[in-house]
Length: 428
Image (cartoon, rainbow, N blue to C red; front, top):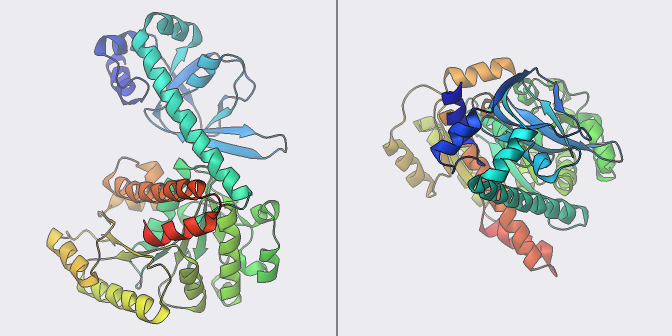
């Protein structure tokens, strides 16, 4: 176990820069522990007894507020450290750690940790670096949340769209939303506006209790956050909120453009990112979503029919719809096993007169199994080529939000103008 433990420690940020001798010393003190899905590793208010390194699985960190509402702080996966802040600060645990999946960990007891820290200057420096970085990230998140609550810049609405079926747009939208939620817990909403055969709940193994079709547009405009939560379904593995457009295909006719605009306006006041999955075509609800978007991420395939469909979509959006701010972005997806040469990507870029923001490779069995199990591929296989490509897009979107917030903060006197300027000039 010592060799594997040493390798795992090297993947953990807090231990990554330590010399091999220090890693071997620490690995001798580690003890393996296994916990099942939904089992609590430690609770808020518990005494601090150890820190942990995740080997397999995922851990959810959350706090309970005085109002009874739970606030998700982070999701931690393989190679990440859990509970080190409690060892550094002393006192009781400030949050609850719960296993999202069956999880295997390596435990370092408090007494061993204290002895290591007292005699290892390198470890002390690395801990100080990681603590400072996490504190800065938390302050940034609190600043964003406070800004939204006080009427500052609203969240970013990103529509995922393919002009033809079978391009993998729903799979990409779902996994992109989960990847964002894992980086910004409780700050991401996914709206399933594929009103005929929406599969977002199926891909996440969710059963929504109600839908957008069940409420009037006027009622949506008057809602507070507590009321909205009733209509949202929380994905427990990521804290992502899902808003189903319909529960049955025949309800699609009940969803109007007014519904869509009211829902997106409300959600962007509550969440940093609002991802919208729409079906093919330019139906009235789809048009309302496109007109409300800061980013329109068009999913492309490299075959001739796909290229033609996307170029026609581009023409319609620019010449007929005249979407404000030129929000169009292009993501190349490979939903089939046939290889796509770089020349095809260049041909697509030439046809669109635009650079692609990314290319998602064919996922094969990895994506298929994740869908069958109701698990996002970015959670089930985070190191796969497909997941890395999707996570890369998520990181670009998160950077866009951070830039918008910083610009708005610098121009506090006119935050909406600054935000509009940024989202128009620097899309994903």
